[in-house]
Image (cartoon, rainbow, N blue to C red):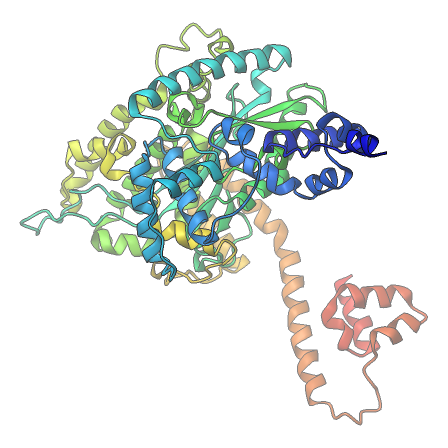
Length: 598
């Protein structure tokens, strides 16, 4: 009996994180629990515990810096101070996503700094032993600069080969392959030494704007589909958006104007997947065709398992390789920003007579910025989008003979700068301004100037990590002058005056005038409905006042919703339920209002 028990006794096995992930994947495919127990040499309770840790395991794998991090580590033990550990790791990921080298000494020094900023009472030396535990906990492998460069080059070469195989094996066309990437836009940032008034003897430096928007751009390799921009600001409900019913972009907000994992998941499932699927059907592809979304290893991007829906799946670039091969970084975002700055500076020059830079910046709101961004994104050409893929996947470059003659994302700024200077010189005699050519060129190419690039600050990292769901509904001072709502009749008159103005301009085409005519016709058609709604609202207000003045002993009691259901007129009851303000009114009044609307 003793020998049988010893033979039946199972040897203790501690699985690695990689093996635990394999078990979860096999469970998803329908593998039996008993069979997995035999294969991995563990008990039933172990398999069930692993299933409960599904989300934590997948999250760790997605955030792991190396494969060794999940193939060697066996536990998910957290640090003594979870907040400190999360903030430091987020800082590390941000620096890695920016392509910056991070050494062990830098990590230890930053850990001490965060220890002070977070006001942690317990002492910690942050020694080499702590560093090894931190690296092991997060699957981090630090490399020397030369080793990192060689590793990046090899990773790029391997990924290009793997991506080509993916395109071939899945029979993907350029219409089915997308890339999305975030970029910062300082929406009220001016050139440093420009726009001096004529009476100023010394040109003053314009203070660089701190207002930042994060913009997510996404387009396919064919250049035939640009997804609607996702813009993340600081204010959840800017005053400038008051009364807006048409939004040219998707707008989200948080305290640091970051794209978070929650925002990214919402954009992927509710916006990207429907848009990309509709486009593929439009170009004649199958309804269930595969769609690939290429993403970098930004910390805002959730694990692959959370971005997989409707045969649409993401693929991630290797760490620290984003600037080398990511399509959006090969001239696309640069082109969009240059279009935006071109439009912005023209507005500055055109409105300079109204009070100078400070007056213009007070008038130019975030609403103007998002419309300019949408127009700038629309101005990015198909050729720019196509040529952006030439490093990652040369096999999908197109057959146009002149496709490689000019990569617009890199060369267009020279023409824009010259055009801006000509425009400014024509306006100079009227408003007395001066523009520095070198400063404008530098401003348009600000991505090449390190002084213009603002990294995410430590305070922003701490704020987002420790308060990820907090909302900032505060409105900035640039939105004080919000225009009043324009009435329908006034809008029609403005459209008529605008048409009269356009007819007097020689550079305006007949088609341009017809567009405004069509808009005015739409307004005229909608006017009767608008008047009916206005009269109905006035009737609601009048009845509400009369009900407030009526004594409680009135012989005509106000019916409840249950009484409405008991009436012999089900249509009247349904009408009252659909129009909530009517629920508190007498039945006779409800009938009159219904007759008036009909």
